[in-house]
Image 1 (cartoon, one colour):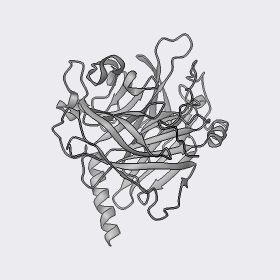
Image 2 (cartoon, helix red, strand yellow):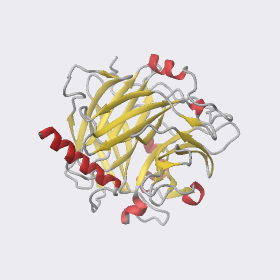
Image 3 (tube, one colour):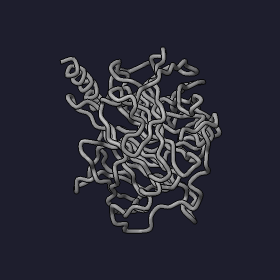
Length: 381
């Protein structure tokens, strides 16, 4: 009975997410204290270190006495794993320094700062939920705090570019795409998954891969876009009900991981990650890919919304995920870390396409990224 009550309570809380979230905090600005509490990946089986294709590499629950901390919906971690940048669906930036133990497992966040995201007029977008519902984040460099940051927003659907490298968290945006170009998107189901791609040969503008959360086309597939500057083309992603996309991360080999979540009153929360081959992301294509992990609330997860990936220096990747707690006391802000081994990436990258490519894929003319060790030099095998 107690377990049933907990599932119902969490289900009701998450159901409020669909209605637009809980609470309207009066946001602070500046340095904040963040405490970290270690997590056990599977409390029912403490010896479990691998689930699906991913290896558990540690995780923490993050708390802060500042009532404005929470709602994190997008995440970017630096190539060396030392720094993070996140966005809140209440229009806030979070920056910080990641801390690791002697085994290379994440154990905390230091030097955390919160700042309002600015609008085109230089004023905070936190004034209204309509303007401040930031969902997707990606950057064009190895360090998110020394890069150009791209942010997708729901409700007032758009993609903005922020010059974090030169103006830090006080950057004003450049507007790239609005709903007039993107077409009709579901009010609370717009672009949640966003990933950067280097410019193609002969192109000045970097590319973006954007996938909506809950906007379907007439064929029942998820609407998605390949963008270069202000120009874009469409493709579609095969849905895997009851999951819905929440973020996208580019791997060192150029392929992508799609983070998805599910929730129901009785079933609670769930998360899965699909592997999407870069060669399949072409205009007009229907894209699908193998599932690397699929877990429910018996594991240490919550409303997982942000995903970032970096090289492990050995042909594999470190993955980071953050959850959106919706400013709900029943939910948690979790920061999780996993390892995707090199042999698994090689196998997946070499697998047959899951959808036919209609045209030349959006591909990089640059290296996918240099090897990057853990900040303290300790990398778990």
